[in-house]
Every structure is written in C-alpha cells, then in structure tokens.
Length: 328
Image (cartoon, rainbow, N blue to C red):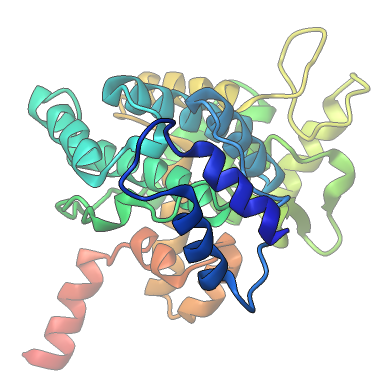
C-alpha cells in the first residue's frame, strides 16, 4: 500500500524540470513512511451540494420524530440562509452566518426571537454536518445567542375560560376547550389522539409527544362529561378523537383548532386566543398551587426543566400576597 501511495504522490507532481528530483522525493517519502502503514478511508464522505446536505439533514430530523410542520420550517429557514449566503456549506465561515443574521436584523422585518430561532436552526444543521464528519467544526458555535427581552406572557383567567365555553357553538368545541385546559397537552398532540386512547374510568390518556415520546395526560371530571357527550352524539365512524363538523368528518388538524379558537375569541371580544396559551395557563396554575417543578415538567412532556420554567409565569396576584405575608 505504501508503494502505491508514493506512486500516486509522484504522479501528481508537475512535469518538467524541478528543484527536487523525483528520486529525492521518493527517498524522503519512504523514510517518512518507514514503519508506518497507509490506509485508504473507505468511509470517506463525498462532498455534497447544499440541497443534498439539507435533504439528508431533514431526513435525520424526521427519524428523530420532528413533525411535518417543524420540518417545513427547517427547510424554509435553511433555504433562505444558504441562498442568501451563496456558498457551499464547506466554505461557509462564522463571519458569513453573522453577516446574514445582521442583515436580517437590520431589515427590521423580524424580531430578536425570530432571528434567534433562525440561528438555532442553522446551528442544528451545521452540528449535524459536524457529527456526520462532513465538516470539522460548526461555524455557528462562535455566534452568541441573540438577546431576547423577557416578556410576561398572558394566561387565561377562570372567567375568560368560562366566557369561551359559553360562546362555544357545539359540544365538540366545548370538549376541546376543556381538554386543553385540564391536560395542558400540545395542540399537535391533541389532533393525533383517537377515541380508543381515552381511558374515561381513570380520566387519563396516552399522548405521543415530541420525538415520539409517550406520556400520560390527565383530565378532570368536567372534561370527562363533555368528551363523553360529544363522542356519544357523533354518527361518523372515524377513530379520531376530534373530527370536522361536516361530512366526511375528517380528523381535525392543528389549523382547524387554531381557526376555531381564533374565531371564538373574536366573537367574545378576546384578543389572540390560541391553544398554546391553555398549556401555559396550566403550567402557571400548577406551580402557583405548589406542584413540584419536576412533576410539572413531566406533565407537560418537557425534556429540559428550563423550558418548563419559561412556560410557568409567576402570577402577580400571588407575588403581592407573598409580599404582604413575608415582608409587611
């Protein structure tokens, strides 16, 4: 193998007169390789185009359990970033990515949260390339997280939830509101549920979370009653827990729940009613009432406890009561 390697090196040398004769180079190579063996890396990665690399990255994310919605967001974000930078991923440096993010920020069309989300997606892509040995180092690693001002996000009061229930036009919508309120599950998890997944006796169900991780979710007695009434009234044969109101009664999608709640909110004079806010409300109530943060983390299906702490907003009323109790 060493002889063959030396021959290949010599074949690459320019033809014609040289200050270093081939004989001298051959002797130098043999001396350097003496006692060593040259191996051919049969698993060496071939250089990919940006599109090929992106396709493989998205396939790996799909295997990890990312939803189609997340995959589409990754694809759109990477196409925009790689297209604007205009280089093959092998040639992209930290300065290229920093420049792209700065230009994005200067346009003023996106907030810091959006820009940092773009940074995270691009970093995830290059981390995958690094782990798969397509590149030696992730160029995004040098770029610091974009600072985001913390906003106290709103939760729903008991009064608001009751107003939504009263204005709901059908049993299905009441059951959806109750289910979101009492379980705190993601809307993407709700639409995957089937009627058979619900254990009414134990008031619990198995949900498939992010990364196809399963966990139990629990609902209260009111939710149980409304769910049973809704299911009993249905005449379709669809196995889905929630379906459209009109024939052919298809499984309800994420957008269907979001549109229903947005429309209901407008009818009630409420701004931006969104399914995710029910989840945040549950987390906040649980912590305010003393549930250990680790249990709240498990209930919500968070892999990191920091995420749970971000969801759980401190109730100002409780802070005021605590101030009176401990400091006045």
